[in-house]
Length: 460
Image (cartoon, rainbow, N blue to C red; front, side, top):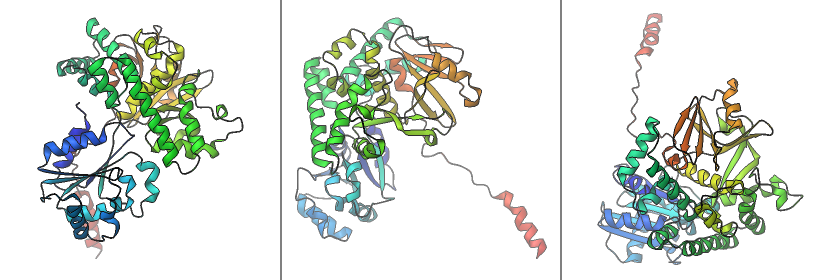
């Protein structure tokens, strides 16, 4: 299955001044598979060391203090030829060997081989690393398969993507047959999600029951990780994890601590939420005091929504037979949380930090995204009355917020009216955070400083 992260890995490989690549993300999203396939396809020699499966592998770095000693230990351990400039060494589940993480700076300085590190629980085990290899790693976070990757796995052709992108950029409506098919595929993505095993099973069998079995096993694996790796507050973390579906099912979809315990306070539970976020399992979406730039400083960390990293997993953990209702396009109000989770997953994978605004009685915006100096208010509509959006109208009318345009994602076709764009759900894949690309060269001109130099010479 095609993954966009492969393009990033190729750019990294071709960089003459490359660091080690560190690929992070939740369990079961396909990190190991992608790195393994990339290594075998692009290097003459590929070495893989998994610190979970090979529990003695940490001895490679245990007493070694120089790159030469580490590489000698590596060659002895794997009993394979390592050719400088033609070998990729893959250190998997590196969170289980903090010494290896520290050793990366020596190995990168040595420069003989390329290194990729991968880990699923780096965020919750970082404190075990004695010395971080700051400046020696290119860190990339990987997510479940994006909607576009899901479409590719299901046989959608590039011509379709080009056509849809042209419609998105020009503001023209999509042909009705394509629109209906894409809406159906989006509903499939909601219930299957982006976990590669679930997607592969769906593509091969179209059996939702088998997909749910895989999703349920992944949910259980996450619970086992909590029991194994959460040093403190295991019960709190598990309670929060298990309550995500029911909290999203509430009208305002906010996570209410009182649902766990009436006397619960944020300061006692904050570390538990952070654990789930660091493990890549949960996606927090914080409320803001005001939808103005920069959103970051306006966050209220005691008010938030908590989404699962994968909506397919959310469906598997939710009400019975929710998959059938979604396939029948019955996205009623009580399924609004599932739809919002879908967009939180998409926006996060597309590079955005998600936030929302809720001023009771006046304005409730599902998401606020920031691109540079611009705020994009977003409403997610599940029903046919998607042109009723009092909150969006209110936000656009507030001159002090300086919001120019809003987006309503809906089941309808693409349409623009005044300052509001109505986009089909599936076009969310095109709304991406802007990146500063390498090769963006600026001209540093110091000629303006010559006047100071001339004045100084005159004084002398």
